[in-house]
Length: 247
Image (cartoon, rainbow, N blue to C red; front, side, top):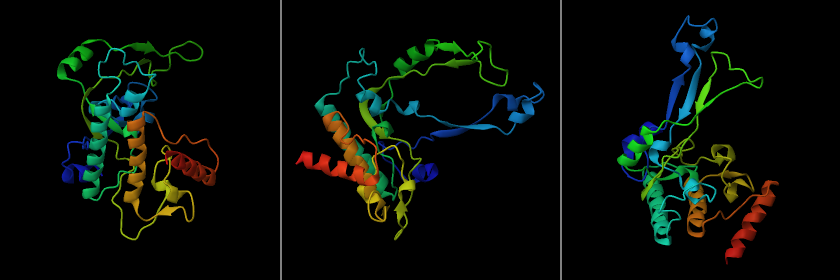
């Protein structure tokens, strides 16, 4: 999908950055350095790299995040409205080239990364490191990590947005039905996946459902539905009650 996106999508609001890579285990690169080294020669890690695209909207809207020193937080209503129109523009760009995003939510919408000067100052500081100890307070064996760095938010500039994460994206086929397992479990499922045959033959409308949740959160500073568990029928009833409350 990433190659298709890079070739066909020209929208500045859609990130075509390759967001995944394969990292080999460090001991697999030094054969003979340790008796257990051969066990790691075929061990690889799948890594997702998102910070280069900027801070996600979910973090920007989270009151628990520490943005006390950022004059752009909280966003003004005008800024939120601009962001809402950019999300719609980015999703339209995907649909024009036949792509269903499939996982639109605030965590997959990022604001622009900070300036080069900001990043230069950030990289000049040593990251906060912690020594890893086992439950017995000893260092781990040499084939396991012994130190870790804590993640740090790189910040952002509020100029524009980008849609990211195309792990659930696909090119739909005509006259094809898609079941719930084609879409992520972390976002509220569309109603057609909760009743009847629990399948959808118009996947672009699924993106419209996800877009609705993003727009509601942008304009009201909070999610519309907070699932309380239960079965599909119960969740569908929650949808009906929440939508009726808007009327």
